[in-house]
Image 1 (cartoon, helix red, strand yellow):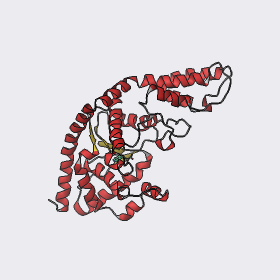
Image 2 (cartoon, helix red, strand yellow):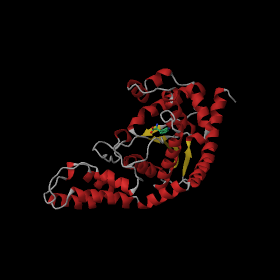
Image 3 (cartoon, protein in one colour):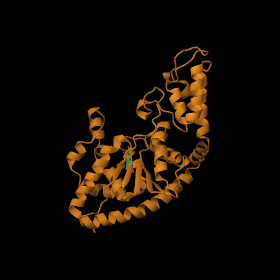
Image 4 (cartoon, rainbow, N blue to C red):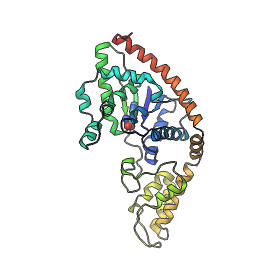
Length: 320
Ligand code: TRP
């Protein structure tokens, strides 16, 4: 079993990412051979501001490292530091039926929404296949929205192997539908596209402002409250755990405990729960050289592995 996953650096990591992806991925990688990378080449399909991209890459890396990614145990690298991936991308594109890309949801959605469709967006699934097949990954943990991309990777690998024998390993997705889903500020799923997120390492003040912006009803302080009337209780429950949440539920239902109290509690539990991680995050963001060194170390390991697959592929197709 070899696990690999990629993270696109296109937004500040938020609590939804933490519960939905970062925490489960790190748990899954414990004691297993794992590869995790920052998909900066994929970000170029939509992001055209170099200053922002550079900042996002550091931000995402510092976040995962602060939250427990150990770069001595997980091969952790930046996609663009492994040029072999771009080379494999081209070779695989010659084994990709156009119809396969034509049916890709992400491209169709962008096209139908009248967004710019560049060739990179169109061939996004081929680069993603190169990411996955390059490292002979057997299991790829992703969100539901990436299921089709995994099917495309399998199709491409199958097509390649059809011509050349068992060179590429067919990956299986790991789609965990049981991950905790934290609601966003407006009650919908927390997501960058809804602009309702709480970035994990925003300043204490910014987090406070966001939590206090959550709309509540005007039940008077002394009256009993329905814990499920807004998102605050659900947030608290996920962050603080069941036993503290049961206490808060009882207080809300008894009356005399207001939404303002609960907002304070939610803010407090975010600040306390991530205090150590925040210190590590702040340190890394203030010492970019440490992040560069981690990327350099990851690139060496990833390239050694990539060179082997690329060699096999080139031999198979006749480039060597
Ligand atoms: N497309 C993925 C996303 O948007 C990111 C990604 C790029 C990825 N390459 C990958 C995920 C390889 C898993 C494996 O989330």
